[in-house]
Amino acid sequence: MSTKQRILDTALELFNTTNTQAATTNHIAKAMGISVGNLHYHYKNREEIIFRLYEQMLTENTLLVEDLPKNIVELFEHQKLVSKILWKYRFFYRELLFLLSRDPELKTRYIKDNIAHRQRIRIGFENLAQNGDLNVPYDNILEQLTDTIMLVLSFWNPMLETLGKEIDENGFEEATTHIRGAMRPYLTEQALDALKVFAES
Amino acid sequence: MSTKQRILDTALELFNTTNTQAATTNHIAKAMGISVGNLHYHYKNREEIIFRLYEQMLTENTLLVEDLPKNIVELFEHQKLVSKILWKYRFFYRELLFLLSRDPELKTRYIKDNIAHRQRIRIGFENLAQNGDLNVPYDNILEQLTDTIMLVLSFWNPMLETLGKEIDENGFEEATTHIRGAMRPYLTEQALDALKVFAES
DNA sequence: ATATGTCAAGAGTAATTACTCTAATTGTAA
DNA sequence: TTACAATTAGAGTAATTACTCTTGACATAT
Image 1 (spheres, each protein chain N blue to C red):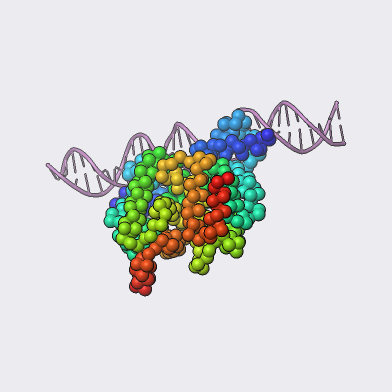
Image 2 (spheres, rainbow over the protein chains, first blue to last red):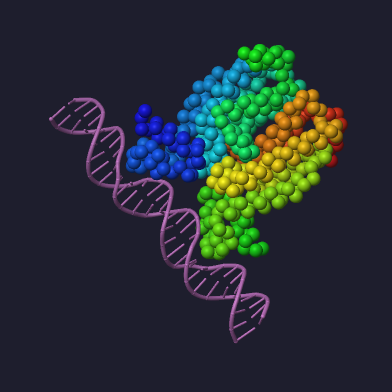
């Protein structure tokens, strides 16, 4: 593997186990047994490393998001994959607002991406409604459910940590349960049947 | 006002406008026109300042939480007050996980308090169910709603920021709307009537 | 009047951070 | 082989951070 990629990997490892402030460029270099000069040959500073890690995460994520889940089963299958990414880059969500406040460029970029992300989720819910998976007795339900997803995706793991629970790769199942619980009052018979089959498979 | 309290106030102001790492003890002292020595006479280091700010927030908060909301109207009235505190100490929630990772003592303390907090909310929902404000057609609904409240309280403002929205003192109304939306499918006629009166007052 | 504790100023500093710079080594294309 | 670029090592450093230490002012009790 290239030194450039190994730096990202080592940084990710250190960021996840401690935090971005504790893991200085000097530390990262020492941890992987290369010189500081070498590290700075590849990356201007820690900000750039974090930025590249964000872009890397995005690549892994948007690959998955490219085609929206078309029905309720696809939605929950999709969430399993997302949860792996949330775990892999957990440092990022743990420090999200702090990181954005320290790097204006990252902030601009993240907000742009995040707004687009929300839009996609919103459209996904509209599709579900049109497919007959979702009842919409009141106007604002799709907005409501979209906010729930956004909250859970970014902050479910952090919330678990604030309750003293250690998070792991599989810990996102509870989050999926929560999302399903939020959707439950609006699921149609058709959707419930599909989920029953999904759960048994 | 005592110097000791003025330090907290100045630190809070700086933490909110920038972040806790940018606002060093040296900066805080300079910002309020006292010497570094003086600041360190009152507080050992920045961690202690943050810890005291947390305790101060807790005092303001638990005063409110002492008696649980007994019905749906009290619940939403209570949330208005809480939102002021979330705004006043917004730096804390913005950096929550980061701060906990840097100060093990704060982490232990916060988790302990937060678990207790969740417990109170959970009991509050049980009371609502017993009062006849809340239907409980499935077992896990109270857990579901408790998680919703926990997520929204800690992370609603941060989520807004990740969507590029500037938050302010009143921005928590949307959050209240979200919570109400989450509860809506389970509200009884009695609760809906009470809320109608509440909205008109 | 003096002693004692509290509060404050500000100079000084060890440690760390976030790099830069130079020189050496390695790969690679002609 | 010989340029030449890419990569790497590691010494060196300016700036910052997070304090400590000494000295002094002021208030209060004896």
